[in-house]
Length: 250
Image (tube, rainbow, N blue to C red; front, side, top):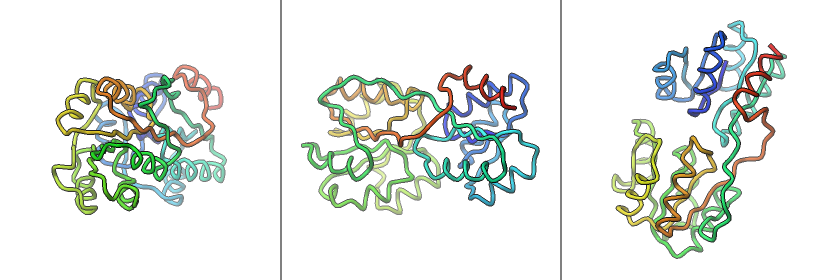
């Protein structure tokens, strides 16, 4: 089974399928499962707690679980590893290496959301664009450091996500609902059209569009705050190396 929350996960699942392995891709959202199905993969969707994952793993003859979830899905990673330990099932964590970004006065790094909000509050800009997804929006809007700022959000265009945004008080003019990947030119055009003065992003790597955001911000002289990835141990970051390592233990 592959827990796949990103394009990286689907790429890995496809590579394993091409090598003759039977793969089930598990995603949080139906949209993520649809993307996997479009690529010819078997997929299921829906949130899982420890018992749900245990039942799923025990109900089929899985030889290993590969965790290719988003770098920030900390709770899912911890839960999956705990379940695999209890079932004596091999657990492997895979993600691509983070980008090696240049040091620049416009690029600020934050350990967590409160720190990022504090940095944003100290910057001159009033119009802040969050490109960090919808899951933590409630935390963002609760922070007093941003009470005098105007927040814009870029999120997936699904009914569930949009309902969450509206329930938190975001108006249509504050919501950019679009599916990436986005080019540097697309980011630049959007930043300019909305008069964005600060951008907040995750350290999501090449697939997540971090580099394009960096380039767009530097070109437009816009401060960029990047949320650091949670510290974790991973297996081989090269796809061929990872597959070789996985097949050696199967």
